[in-house]
Amino acid sequence: MVTRFPLWQNLAQWVTGTQAKIAEADENKAAIDIWSYAEPAGEEPDPLKRNVLQWRRLITSVREPLDIFPGQPVDIVGFVHRQFPGAPNQFVLARRIIRCCLADTVPLGLAIHIDTADDFENDTWLQVQGVFGTVDVRNRPTLVVIPKQIQSIPEPKKAYINGVF
Image (cartoon, rainbow, N blue to C red; front, side, top):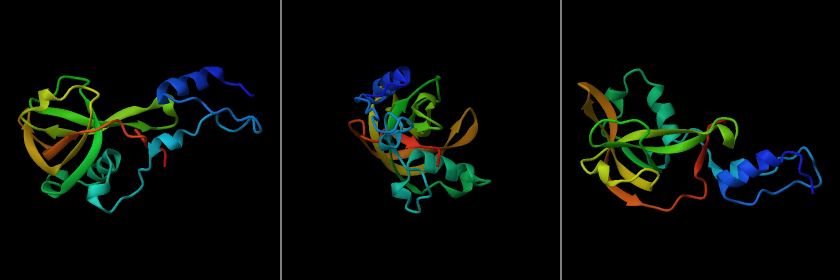
């Protein structure tokens, strides 16, 4: 058995919660296939199939997102993320984005606006269905998701999003 990078293999095992598969025949082969833990983030024409990274790329690609996106349907999966105190009645529904490898993932998400936002605990996985809307945050109109339905779900098998390609 080849164990050239035990620290990285242990880190990968800890992050993914799985047993790292060691490549015995090919020493250049990765110890684990991180892409089996990440869903793709290429262009998705169906708004109800876009993940948070696809939405964020689309939103930042237009000059006036507040003129374009309100009213558009959204169906996203992610975990509740509150790193800093945010706007009242809001939390971020986030996913961890792989930028290079599992060690450099970053959370990225969309703001969810609902009166009961404080009822959702950090790191709880949710599926949110709703529409984009605008609310004033610090006297500035901000694009948010207005949920019609929120469902608690288990962490998906592909908990990460492939932000590399």
